[in-house]
Length: 226
Image 1 (cartoon, rainbow, N blue to C red):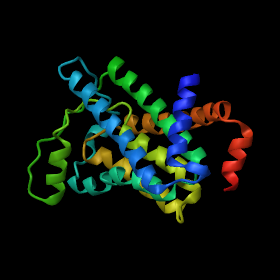
Image 2: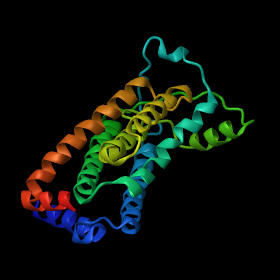
Image 3: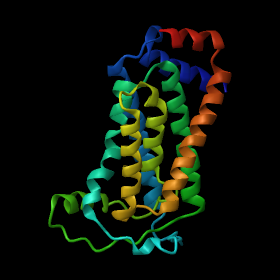
Image 4: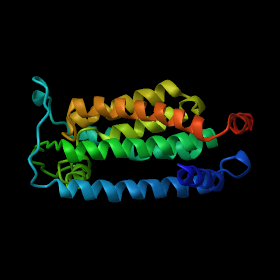
């Protein structure tokens, strides 16, 4: 715990010396986190190929139409981290975001390994920009569904930045629309989205409790005032 606390403190101080975030350094920190996420996610996904897996359709869900144009909404999930670059309030939120991100990955990866889920994708005819972009998504093997990390990581960005964005309701509406879009491009089941939201919220709350134990109250109060 002492080493973890020191690592977290060093990273936070590097990205936010004197208690103020340096946005250029924040880009580097988030890029490193995203790079770790991609490498670890793909490793588990390819490991799952050929394993016995489950389908999690609700009774009515398989009848939802396939609408490739929802790919444009889905792509918002890749852009949401940019919100953190510009709107993350301060060092405390950065620490909590990083902690919640690690907790989310740990729980999600355990779920992928212990409870593999597979989603059969439709045959795709590439005849538009939407279907072309979707064909790139479909190169990723169709495992690692439960929970949806696409949804979970986006919810973490929302939770960390919601008090510092100009139009939080619009931000929330886009996030909900992005999450639901996964159903219409056959990237996730509805239960994946629900689990992703619950995991992000739980991880955020637990990360807040951990941060409160690791960082003295006087320091957190001082950061809030800057």
